[in-house]
Picture (tube, rainbow, N blue to C red):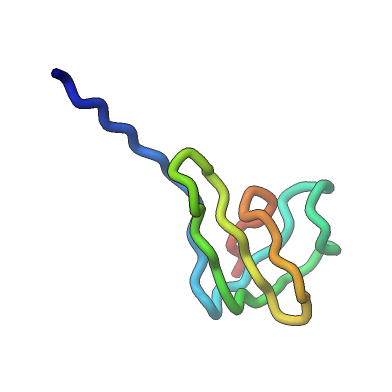
Length: 69
């Protein structure tokens, strides 16, 4: 019996990274935000983690964020 293997790639962020929105669908205003927590995808086929930034109580999909300098 053959075994199938799958690889899923997703963006990761570390506390202290600075991120900014990449889409108008992002709930953040344009700007630079400091990451305080990153939750990796919990289900193997999900491709976006959740990012928590300073000053916001709810997490944001990593789909709408990118690291900024």
